[in-house]
Image (cartoon, rainbow, N blue to C red; front, side):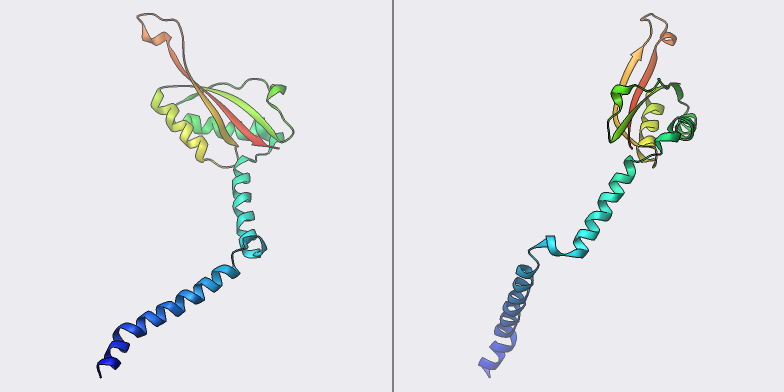
Amino acid sequence: MLLLACYEFAFKNTIEAWQAHSQLKAKLTQSADLSVQPAYIERKSKNLDKVISLYKADTTQFRSNIISTIAGIADKENVKLAEVPVQDATYHTDHFIIEKLDFEGDYFSLLKLANDLQSTGNIGVIRSEDWKVTGVKSPNDDMKKLVLEVYLEIAR
């Protein structure tokens, strides 16, 4: 009776756990080569497509539609789109275009704008930001301006 009780409460659970371990170990060795699993490759491809779609924008209409979208975001955050410089050929590569945009406003509004630009899709991705204080140093703080230069990277 004691042997049957020991088997039921101790040995049976240990043997079942050992069998489950052996089965899982066999499955793990079978699936160790992830390069041959089509579902994994498909998921990886979809994830890469999502990342690439963040960088894409219609470069032929960037100067009209996208800049008007960005100006709307800037207006919502009470920020002035100060300058959209002429396209510089040094910022163009075979795969990407980098556009520079200058915004003026207070620190918190510019910070909200940068967050909105980062979260908005189909306008490119912020490559870098440059914060500058411009203006003449004087006792009157009205002469100083905080400028945010944003470099947007867009895939061709």
